[in-house]
Image (cartoon, rainbow, N blue to C red; front, side, top):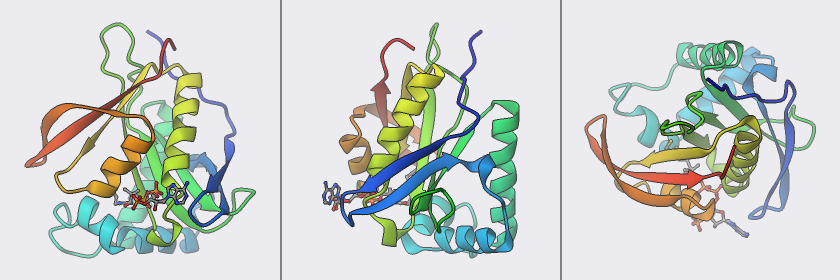
Length: 195
Ligand SMILES: CC(C)(COP(=O)(O)OP(=O)(O)OC[C@H]1O[C@@H](n2cnc3c(N)ncnc32)[C@H](O)[C@@H]1OP(=O)(O)O)[C@@H](O)C(=O)NCCC(=O)NCCS
């Protein structure tokens, strides 16, 4: 069975067309997880859009705590170590050491060959960096294709228009509906061609 193969070092320059500012996409396991990084992750996760779509229900209305951010970075590192899931960070500026703007992930090693469904992606972005996610998802597609993925998919909860528009701009096609955590989500797919 084939497994995804990513470069050991990833530092993809991104351009935010909305703000005209540069960003860098890199592997989450390359980041030194300092208390300042944990604070950034907590702040990102407690922003209204991110909290509302990703955390309000799971945390039953409680704020996203530092322990969750520690868990997130630990989970991200484990994914790269074990080859099970692949988390990337978007850092503001060039060089990969600026403020944390957002995160995105490829949630499995299912390359989409031989009847596999391909891997789900997910993402979050701090509001002040709006405009950086579409270029990040496009860069992720290239990385995924080079790693051997043949298809990617994403789920969108009802009403999450910003997320739906990211997928639309990035070329995903809405293909149907699926139940997820009590919501009837739409399912979006992208074919990457032969891996
Ligand atoms: C989903 C999410 C990442 C989308 O963020 P976003 O800022 O809307 O997405 P982008 O970074 O692609 O920026 C899009 C905006 O940039 C602008 N933009 C895009 N291309 C542009 C261009 N060439 N020139 C100028 N502006 C441009 C547009 O105004 C666009 O906004 P619009 O959708 O109102 O048209 C963000 O809302 C979020 O983190 N939500 C919470 C988490 C979540 O729902 N995740 C998805 C489930 S896994």
